[in-house]
Amino acid sequence: MSFRPIKSTSQAQPTMEGAGVHLHRVFGFGDPAESDPFLLLDDFRNDDPALYAKGFPWHPHRGIETITYVLEGEVEHGDSLGNHGLLGPGSVQWMTAGAGIMHQEMPRGNAAGQMHGFQLWANLPSALKMTAPRYQDIQSSDIPQVTEDDGTRVKVITGAFWGQTGPVDGVAAEPMVLDVSVPPNTRRSLPVDTYANAFAYVFAGAGSFRDASAPQGVRVEKEFAGEELNIRDMTGNRTLVRFDTGDEITVQAGPEGMRFLLVTGRPIEEPVAWHGPIVMNTRAELMQAMQDLQNGTFIQAQH
Image (cartoon, rainbow, N blue to C red; front, top):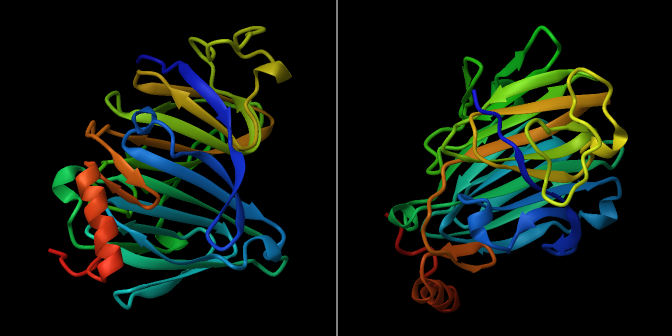
């Protein structure tokens, strides 16, 4: 097995989207090659309904797929094709926007007013940019979970992992999306596709993904080999970790344990012309999408 060293780390940055939803952007609207085939990841987490209740009113999508994963609260969604539903705690929606769809998402907090979830955008290859829109709504009870002897728990949202296959299927990027919880002071190795890009996003607890190296410019006090982790070596809440090549990721949880999303996908390696939630291959295709929006034909030609 070849361990994946860390390529870089970064912190999610506060921003606003929709009608005034306060969230943290993990990555997005930068160099799309960095996370190909993934374009954007947002962490929408808040305890104050005033900072998210106005939600994400009607907006267009074309040329991408979006995954919404809800941990706390609910997200009510609807679209221009007449689809509508409610995502509760632990549920997932994977939407293939394809040729075009108008969509809205309205978050609601739990009894304590808490709302927490993620939205990840995956690019579509040119051959599928204008495919028909498709939804996959997955309930929490339908997502398989694997628990190892050391207490490590993995929810398999999509892809195959430790003998389980996630319920989301037919996704162009052939991704693996996992929700991983590692108990306190536990070291674990996780297999990944050698040919896929891979990243982890830590959203609870802290720990270390170091094995062979640390990010460029980061001073390493010591490698971990069963000894206690130095606090300066640890990766904590709202941290994105991008990995270099290899077929295995090593994680060492700190004294409070660690929970993170682990996401992999094979790069599409195509040109990207990008304007908000519309992602095409060329500027001409992007301008056509803008024209379709203006003249009311945005969702007309779906095949």
